[in-house]
Image (cartoon, rainbow, N blue to C red):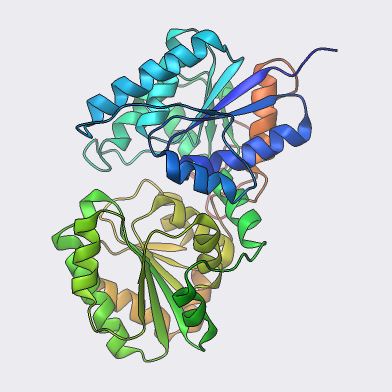
Length: 397
């Protein structure tokens, strides 16, 4: 009996682990591919914690030395470690996710050894190399060495086609983060932070706030915190939960900006189980996170995006998110509109989640199996909400 071919799923950060975990589960359930989860060593503790939410552990954990914390140092360590891993334990294919340094390193290391590359969450584009930095460049570079591009949405697929990628290499599968968050939220795991549990027990509307991107630090974060203070003062029935970035300077800034403010719970970074449950129970989310923009519509939660530019434009087109940047007055105005009018709030997510239907992991498993000659290519995810140029890409990709 022939053994299933090994497929390496490379994860270096928590978002990668979260979005690859449902793929590992789908591969192991189908039985025609052997999913090998590789923790690259970029953020090892956070990868381990994220996988635990799905009752998974890494099959391979790499160690890389970091002294300066620079991108070149990280890239050098990752490429070297992954190159040696592929050399001594050659996979049939490598799956990289998103636009991290780990994803770029994994794609290049596999390409140089002529191992097929599958890019999950392919085709996101902001059109600006400076925002997000360096992620926009990473994902464009990954596309150049990818064999199978698994786009989360029709618009992402269109971006790839516009760049000259052949249509038979692109499939719209949806975003596996939707699979992940639905899977984890359904467990309703208890909150590890008792303060969150106490806050959730009160009859108050939850406003979840996350501002973790580097471009949000400093003065932009001060403006966000100012908006939080004024919203708390204006609405006595809301409670804000703000998981802070682990960077000590950022945490100090958050603590100083919200010192003495009632009905605000500032926490350390929360496990994915807690974050998914918080999101499922939120009335509104203010965030600069791409992942949360993708997850929130599945729970009927509108997102006010604390960025000036987002590559997740599908949520803007569908109406389930609005760009507010870090302008204090604009944040307050948009949040107040939704807090004052529950019908307007519900209308934002009425068309469903444009990022996925919870079946992306199964399509991804089938796409990888098709690459290796073990299955037919999967049918694309049916379009949700507005289409691209008046038509879906269902027949094109």
